[in-house]
Image (cartoon, rainbow, N blue to C red):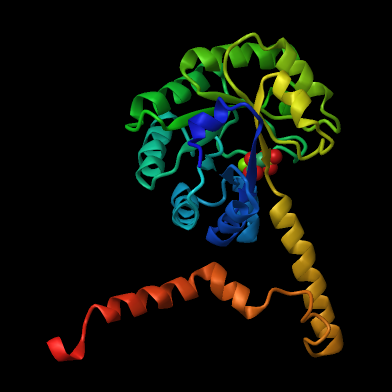
Length: 292
Ligand code: SPV
Ligand code: MG
């Protein structure tokens, strides 16, 4: 298994899956993803609240701890805009690093931030203020391998390509380990243009939610080192759960879905029931009745 930093500098585009709890993190690892993205959208949606800094840093951190303990692959955390100002970001770094995550991502928007695909309400942070936040991560972190991803929202907020590239240069200077260039375009032209225009050295990360048709080999040549499939797991779960719920209420029994849903044995495996019982047996075997 590769470290997050190694993934950023690898010889292929690392594939990262969005997750919202320990179970989805485990499923992402088993499917073969290189890392997981603790998605703010997924975590808030899974609690049926808006993706707009409604959940507190501590509430997100609690979920992140469960994600961390459930998978061995690197965990990259969506930390929105750092939960406030510079000092909030400092405490956030201390707390996130203490639970053992590999990387955090902050975006150059104001608190409270709004999901990038909601029209209007996309207010960008002052670039110098944001550089200070990036610097605060690098100064606060204790583990040299801990990574800071700086997310550029210029193309989301309508600030334009030129300004996006200027921000990239500044965030690199401030100490970011990677740049996430976000786009809501319906094809990859915009992020390709950014990648071609970026003359710095940092690895680039993309989130192709609105532009699903991508070619990873082509993107690698342009400097893109990581792709985050940020929300497809949650969206797939919603459709699947809806279909199952609809069928059961219609037929008033579960026979119609039994072949489509995971067997109980699979749930037990995923939650570690069998491992727990095996461990219990091993512990008990170390004690013999005769000796005690
Ligand atoms: C998330 O997954 O929470 C993200 C990506 O930040 S997006 O929803 O595209 O803003
Ligand atoms: Mg988010």
